[in-house]
Image (cartoon, rainbow, N blue to C red; front, side, top):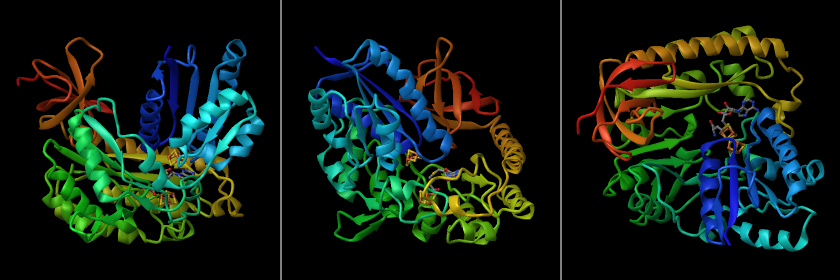
Length: 442
Ligand code: SAH
Ligand code: SF4
Ligand code: F3S
């Protein structure tokens, strides 16, 4: 009999990709997906350690699962992802119901760990080994149908050591997958139904690799090779660092039609003093110049970003510089966070912590500005015709939901169109988070 698997994913798109790969791998050893933990034989929590709130969720989730496990002692609980990597020992100590702790670079060994856990029953088996190349080599080829938009991890890890960030510790050193492996996986995704490929990496634009011609390829060169694959209609990449926004990558935005005119380029802060303390290794003016060059290469490009407010030492004046940068650049979308002191990072030990009240107040001001920009951007799309890649059924009968080139969700009456179709939609209305279009005739 097939066993049942429930995977819950927290955090970034790389975890979404990893969860898909874990599910595929576990399908090969007899596990089929179930939509809830209630009847699962194995629950995998694929966790995120980026902010305190994200990390603490794991412990409350394991608390809930413990009740289930009391009724069904054969159920196994695995904690995967960045919390597993960062605090494996603490997971086992604080959550003794957990059978397996597996880091983001070790999950290809889950089947053997499961076999061991079934024999051992209790005790917590830990594997947090760091060898990304082994992981990608040993994972089976993707097997299940892909959606119209598919994630493809091409780079993992980070050598940048921003002073607030846990990623260099949870994901290890920067590693790029070889170009040939990326191209082969992209072809496989297209064969299984993908029309859009989203290249993923913690520092995706730091990707480097040996290309088919024996030369050292950059991300821009890789994008050109992927755009040539028959059936690849759209390409995106995320998340980028301003330091690795090279001339050829900027130029690719102007010359590769499949590369979508939307870029998530985190800046974190608009004050040079704060950027320096964050160890971002660029100034606000460098970022502004990159934005200008991107807009010169691709005038309709829309930008997204990440911001941290209340970083240690941030004054009211520093914060106003962030607001000023946001006003000048103009974003289609953005994520903003209060600084969260993470154990082991330099910023956590900084004596100049900003009081919680000021962090909250600054976040509210920044979000008001960003939300206004997002709404204005969405409203600006009304009356335009935008190409939409349909990804899923809508709430109402006959409705489909897809994405515009700018990542906005677009709801439309499907007509003859189906999931996986790319169609022009006339935008009739804009909400804060999505657009609605007219009916489609294709
Ligand atoms: N690799 C990406 C971001 C990874 S984390 C990059 O370099 O841009 C995603 C976002 O979480 C970051 O961009 C940052 O805005 C936020 N973040 C990371 N650490 C944080 C912390 N300690 N407190 C608050 N926000 C944080
Ligand atoms: Fe974290 Fe900075 Fe690396 Fe991004 S570049 S993952 S924020 S250390
Ligand atoms: Fe979170 Fe790890 Fe991604 S800490 S943001 S899941 S790389």
